[in-house]
Amino acid sequence: MIDLYAWPTPNAFKISIFLEETAVPYRIIPVNIGKGEQFTPEFLKISPNNRMPAIVDPNGPDGQPISVFESGAILVYLGDKLGQFFPKETRARAKVLEWLFWQMSGVGPMFGQVGHFTRYAPEKIPYAIDRYTNEAKRLVGVLNRRLGETDYVAGEYSIADMAIYPWVKLINTAYTGIGDADFPHVKRWLDQMTARPAVEKGMAILEDQRVRRPLSAEEQDNLFGKKQFAPKE
Ligand SMILES: N[C@@H](CCC(=O)N[C@@H](CS)C(=O)NCC(=O)O)C(=O)O
Image 1: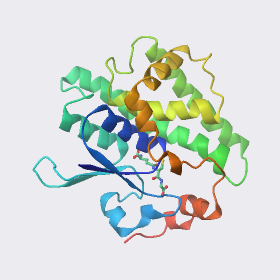
Image 2: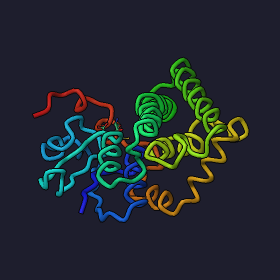
Image 3: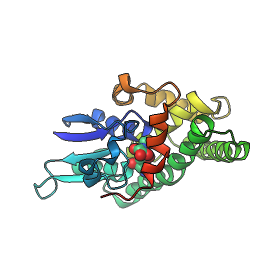
Image 4: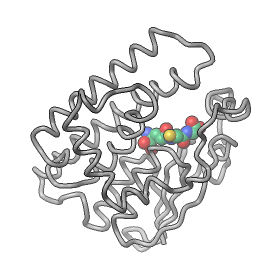
Protein backbone atom coordinates (compact mmCIF):
# COMPACT_ATOMS: atom_id res chain seq x y z
CA MET A 1 0.00 0.00 0.00
CA ILE A 2 1.54 3.30 -1.11
CA ASP A 3 1.04 6.27 1.22
CA LEU A 4 0.31 9.50 -0.62
CA TYR A 5 0.88 12.59 1.53
CA ALA A 6 -1.43 15.12 -0.01
CA TRP A 7 -3.67 18.16 0.19
CA PRO A 8 -6.18 18.97 -2.58
CA THR A 9 -4.05 21.08 -4.94
CA PRO A 10 -2.84 20.50 -8.53
CA ASN A 11 0.55 19.11 -7.50
CA ALA A 12 -1.13 16.37 -5.46
CA PHE A 13 -3.73 15.63 -8.17
CA LYS A 14 -0.92 14.65 -10.56
CA ILE A 15 -0.11 11.71 -8.30
CA SER A 16 -3.68 10.73 -7.42
CA ILE A 17 -4.49 10.65 -11.15
CA PHE A 18 -1.55 8.29 -11.75
CA LEU A 19 -2.53 6.04 -8.85
CA GLU A 20 -6.17 5.96 -9.99
CA GLU A 21 -5.07 5.03 -13.52
CA THR A 22 -3.25 1.98 -12.16
CA ALA A 23 -4.67 -0.65 -9.88
CA VAL A 24 -2.01 -0.05 -7.25
CA PRO A 25 -3.44 0.20 -3.74
CA TYR A 26 -2.84 3.53 -2.03
CA ARG A 27 -4.12 5.58 0.83
CA ILE A 28 -4.08 9.31 1.36
CA ILE A 29 -2.42 10.84 4.39
CA PRO A 30 -3.74 14.42 4.52
CA VAL A 31 -1.16 17.14 5.10
CA ASN A 32 -3.12 20.26 5.97
CA ILE A 33 -0.76 22.92 4.64
CA GLY A 34 -3.03 25.72 5.87
CA LYS A 35 -2.65 24.42 9.42
CA GLY A 36 1.14 24.06 9.03
CA GLU A 37 1.34 20.24 9.03
CA GLN A 38 4.07 20.44 6.38
CA PHE A 39 6.46 21.70 9.06
CA THR A 40 6.27 18.71 11.42
CA PRO A 41 9.61 16.90 11.89
CA GLU A 42 7.98 13.62 10.73
CA PHE A 43 6.83 15.13 7.44
CA LEU A 44 10.12 17.00 6.88
CA LYS A 45 11.93 13.64 7.04
CA ILE A 46 9.91 12.56 4.00
CA SER A 47 9.74 15.94 2.29
CA PRO A 48 12.57 18.27 3.40
CA ASN A 49 11.22 21.10 1.20
CA ASN A 50 8.04 21.33 3.39
CA ARG A 51 5.84 20.79 0.35
CA MET A 52 3.42 18.05 -0.52
CA PRO A 53 2.94 15.74 -2.41
CA ALA A 54 5.25 13.01 -1.21
CA ILE A 55 4.93 9.24 -1.17
CA VAL A 56 6.18 6.39 0.93
CA ASP A 57 6.38 3.05 -0.82
CA PRO A 58 6.89 0.31 1.79
CA ASN A 59 8.19 -1.97 -0.93
CA GLY A 60 10.99 -0.01 -2.62
CA PRO A 61 13.39 -1.30 -5.28
CA ASP A 62 15.45 -3.26 -2.72
CA GLY A 63 12.38 -4.42 -0.82
CA GLN A 64 12.97 -1.67 1.76
CA PRO A 65 10.68 1.36 2.21
CA ILE A 66 11.44 4.40 0.09
CA SER A 67 10.12 7.95 0.30
CA VAL A 68 10.00 10.32 -2.68
CA PHE A 69 9.14 14.04 -2.74
CA GLU A 70 8.64 16.42 -5.74
CA SER A 71 5.70 15.49 -7.93
CA GLY A 72 7.83 15.04 -11.09
CA ALA A 73 10.19 12.65 -9.29
CA ILE A 74 7.22 10.75 -7.86
CA LEU A 75 5.68 10.30 -11.32
CA VAL A 76 9.00 9.06 -12.72
CA TYR A 77 9.43 6.67 -9.78
CA LEU A 78 5.91 5.26 -10.07
CA GLY A 79 6.01 5.14 -13.87
CA ASP A 80 9.21 3.08 -13.73
CA LYS A 81 8.05 0.90 -10.85
CA LEU A 82 4.76 -0.02 -12.48
CA GLY A 83 5.98 0.10 -16.09
CA GLN A 84 3.00 2.28 -17.05
CA PHE A 85 2.61 5.71 -18.67
CA PHE A 86 6.41 6.18 -18.86
CA PRO A 87 8.09 4.40 -21.78
CA LYS A 88 11.43 2.63 -21.43
CA GLU A 89 12.51 3.26 -25.03
CA THR A 90 14.92 6.22 -25.08
CA ARG A 91 13.29 8.40 -27.76
CA ALA A 92 9.77 8.06 -26.37
CA ARG A 93 11.08 8.50 -22.83
CA ALA A 94 12.92 11.72 -23.81
CA LYS A 95 9.66 13.14 -25.17
CA VAL A 96 7.83 12.42 -21.93
CA LEU A 97 10.68 13.91 -19.89
CA GLU A 98 10.75 17.07 -22.05
CA TRP A 99 7.10 17.82 -21.33
CA LEU A 100 7.31 16.71 -17.71
CA PHE A 101 10.24 19.06 -17.07
CA TRP A 102 8.43 21.79 -19.01
CA GLN A 103 5.56 21.43 -16.58
CA MET A 104 7.76 21.27 -13.49
CA SER A 105 9.96 24.23 -14.39
CA GLY A 106 7.43 26.42 -16.23
CA VAL A 107 3.75 25.67 -15.79
CA GLY A 108 3.84 24.83 -12.07
CA PRO A 109 5.90 27.81 -10.86
CA MET A 110 4.36 30.37 -13.24
CA PHE A 111 0.75 29.31 -12.74
CA GLY A 112 1.45 29.22 -9.01
CA GLN A 113 2.52 32.87 -9.15
CA VAL A 114 -0.62 33.78 -11.12
CA GLY A 115 -2.63 32.26 -8.29
CA HIS A 116 -0.56 33.99 -5.64
CA PHE A 117 -0.73 37.48 -7.10
CA THR A 118 -4.37 37.32 -8.22
CA ARG A 119 -5.79 35.65 -5.10
CA TYR A 120 -3.49 35.74 -2.10
CA ALA A 121 -1.13 38.75 -2.26
CA PRO A 122 -2.26 41.35 0.32
CA GLU A 123 -1.93 44.12 -2.29
CA LYS A 124 -2.80 43.91 -5.98
CA ILE A 125 0.36 44.55 -7.96
CA PRO A 126 -0.61 44.98 -11.62
CA TYR A 127 2.93 44.40 -12.92
CA ALA A 128 3.17 41.03 -11.15
CA ILE A 129 -0.33 39.96 -12.20
CA ASP A 130 0.38 40.90 -15.84
CA ARG A 131 3.83 39.35 -15.85
CA TYR A 132 2.69 35.94 -14.60
CA THR A 133 -0.64 35.90 -16.44
CA ASN A 134 1.12 36.69 -19.72
CA GLU A 135 3.69 33.99 -19.07
CA ALA A 136 0.91 31.49 -18.24
CA LYS A 137 -0.84 32.40 -21.49
CA ARG A 138 2.41 31.99 -23.40
CA LEU A 139 2.84 28.51 -21.90
CA VAL A 140 -0.73 27.52 -22.78
CA GLY A 141 0.03 28.72 -26.32
CA VAL A 142 3.06 26.41 -26.44
CA LEU A 143 0.86 23.54 -25.26
CA ASN A 144 -1.80 24.42 -27.82
CA ARG A 145 0.70 24.26 -30.69
CA ARG A 146 2.00 20.91 -29.47
CA LEU A 147 -1.49 19.44 -29.07
CA GLY A 148 -2.25 20.53 -32.64
CA GLU A 149 0.34 17.93 -33.67
CA THR A 150 -0.31 15.06 -31.26
CA ASP A 151 -3.19 13.48 -29.38
CA TYR A 152 -1.43 13.62 -26.02
CA VAL A 153 1.47 15.88 -25.20
CA ALA A 154 4.25 13.32 -25.63
CA GLY A 155 2.39 11.22 -28.24
CA GLU A 156 0.85 8.47 -26.13
CA TYR A 157 -0.99 9.25 -22.87
CA SER A 158 1.74 9.57 -20.22
CA ILE A 159 2.84 10.99 -16.87
CA ALA A 160 3.47 14.28 -18.70
CA ASP A 161 -0.28 14.71 -19.39
CA MET A 162 -1.01 13.86 -15.75
CA ALA A 163 1.44 16.55 -14.62
CA ILE A 164 0.13 19.28 -16.91
CA TYR A 165 -3.62 18.67 -16.73
CA PRO A 166 -4.46 19.71 -13.14
CA TRP A 167 -2.74 23.09 -13.54
CA VAL A 168 -4.18 23.91 -16.95
CA LYS A 169 -7.65 22.79 -15.91
CA LEU A 170 -7.45 24.94 -12.80
CA ILE A 171 -6.12 28.04 -14.50
CA ASN A 172 -8.62 27.73 -17.30
CA THR A 173 -11.54 27.65 -14.96
CA ALA A 174 -10.50 29.67 -11.95
CA TYR A 175 -8.06 32.47 -12.45
CA THR A 176 -7.31 34.17 -15.69
CA GLY A 177 -10.07 33.72 -18.20
CA ILE A 178 -7.51 32.09 -20.47
CA GLY A 179 -10.12 31.20 -23.02
CA ASP A 180 -10.92 27.90 -24.65
CA ALA A 181 -11.59 29.77 -27.89
CA ASP A 182 -7.99 30.96 -28.07
CA PHE A 183 -6.62 27.47 -27.49
CA PRO A 184 -8.82 24.93 -29.31
CA HIS A 185 -6.30 22.07 -29.15
CA VAL A 186 -5.91 22.55 -25.40
CA LYS A 187 -9.71 22.53 -25.11
CA ARG A 188 -9.92 19.23 -27.03
CA TRP A 189 -7.23 17.68 -24.82
CA LEU A 190 -8.79 19.00 -21.60
CA ASP A 191 -12.13 17.42 -22.61
CA GLN A 192 -10.38 14.16 -23.47
CA MET A 193 -8.56 14.12 -20.13
CA THR A 194 -11.62 15.14 -18.12
CA ALA A 195 -13.56 12.23 -19.62
CA ARG A 196 -11.15 9.67 -18.14
CA PRO A 197 -12.70 8.16 -14.97
CA ALA A 198 -9.30 8.00 -13.25
CA VAL A 199 -8.71 11.69 -13.91
CA GLU A 200 -12.10 12.53 -12.46
CA LYS A 201 -11.37 10.44 -9.35
CA GLY A 202 -7.82 11.77 -9.01
CA MET A 203 -9.04 15.37 -9.14
CA ALA A 204 -11.63 14.71 -6.43
CA ILE A 205 -9.36 13.55 -3.60
CA LEU A 206 -9.96 15.33 -0.29
CA GLU A 207 -12.76 17.22 -2.03
CA ASP A 208 -14.30 18.19 1.31
CA GLN A 209 -11.05 19.97 2.24
CA ARG A 210 -10.84 22.16 -0.87
CA VAL A 211 -10.41 25.80 0.12
CA ARG A 212 -12.81 27.84 -2.00
CA ARG A 213 -12.82 30.94 0.20
CA PRO A 214 -10.22 33.57 1.08
CA LEU A 215 -7.48 32.16 3.28
CA SER A 216 -7.69 32.78 7.02
CA ALA A 217 -4.92 34.75 8.72
CA GLU A 218 -3.51 31.46 10.08
CA GLU A 219 -3.47 29.85 6.62
CA GLN A 220 -1.91 32.94 5.05
CA ASP A 221 0.78 32.93 7.73
CA ASN A 222 1.56 29.22 7.39
CA LEU A 223 1.78 29.38 3.60
CA PHE A 224 3.55 32.68 3.09
CA GLY A 225 4.76 33.89 6.48
CA LYS A 226 7.77 33.50 8.74
CA LYS A 227 7.50 29.73 9.31
CA GLN A 228 8.51 29.26 5.68
CA PHE A 229 11.85 30.92 6.35
CA ALA A 230 12.58 29.74 9.89
CA PRO A 231 15.41 27.18 10.19
CA LYS A 232 14.03 23.61 10.22
CA GLU A 233 15.22 20.81 12.47
N1 LIG B 1 7.69 21.43 -6.99
C1 LIG B 1 6.82 20.87 -5.98
C2 LIG B 1 5.81 21.90 -5.57
C3 LIG B 1 4.86 21.41 -4.50
C4 LIG B 1 4.11 22.54 -3.85
O1 LIG B 1 4.33 23.71 -4.16
N2 LIG B 1 3.19 22.17 -2.95
C5 LIG B 1 2.47 23.19 -2.21
C6 LIG B 1 0.99 23.14 -2.45
S1 LIG B 1 0.59 23.20 -4.18
C7 LIG B 1 2.73 23.00 -0.73
O2 LIG B 1 2.86 21.89 -0.24
N3 LIG B 1 2.83 24.10 -0.01
C8 LIG B 1 3.08 24.09 1.38
C9 LIG B 1 3.94 25.24 1.78
O3 LIG B 1 4.13 26.15 0.94
O4 LIG B 1 4.44 25.26 2.90
C10 LIG B 1 6.14 19.63 -6.54
O5 LIG B 1 5.79 19.66 -7.72
O6 LIG B 1 5.99 18.63 -5.80
